[in-house]
Length: 346
Image (cartoon, rainbow, N blue to C red; front, side, top):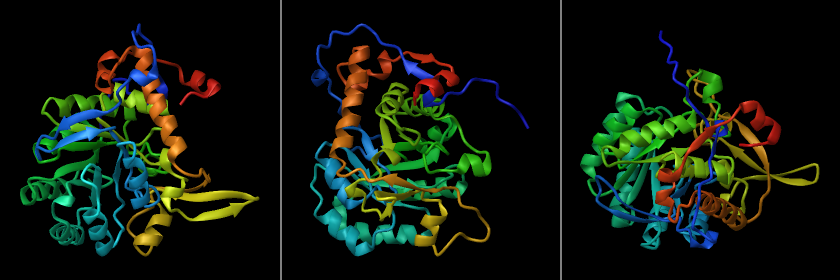
């Protein structure tokens, strides 16, 4: 047993200090990014926000809505093969959509069948597991890279710099960062495992960027200001689940509660998800997610405007003309948690 004494921070522990700016309007800020991925060599241009691969967020309908604003989507894992082939075959070349998969033999075989039919239409893959520290996960990423050298691979989740480096060296273009910060994730409560998300972003970004790789901050964002902090901390992409949940495009189940329309939202390791997709919780494990009822939020368009407007506004406060400048112009100020709770900061 050992104890690390170094301070680690979550989004709610900091604010971004404003700086002198020559910007006169939020409209002057460019929040798109351009990347060339380390292994695939593919070029990316867009707003680096990704809808999470949850079955009530990462839907075909969400991808269509987000693509209008140059945002990306990681599709959930539970579409049928024929649905995926048809979708990717009709996908515009400009859209950034990730095919999501686990690391079982069945996951790999399904991907190979869909990829062989859809061809180059599948250019991005998200390899998604709860625990990115296992040898089987690393071996899978290596195998996928060797078999498909020209696809862009996003893989995770991890929270430490050394694992970010290992994944980049083993074939990942983007490392997905975050264990336990999601609004419907209970991993920290059930297992005691986790890492404060902002510190995880800062440390993993530093490690990945040193090797020419990228990171995607996954989980913990509850407001546009949290996205600004993630980008300010060095995230190249930010993945959103709860902030995009409850909308028409999520295709989630709705219920009536005291005359108010609600939408079911649950973590992908929750009992609700495992009952739906795996026939229940296996007798050797416990659920590490929860189910909540969210207020129905209508079309996602208004929420997207809030998110993108908030990030643009953050850039104006620190004088960043482009999103890529934000991390260079960010100074974080530590704040007392009790003040956050009093004033409702997130």
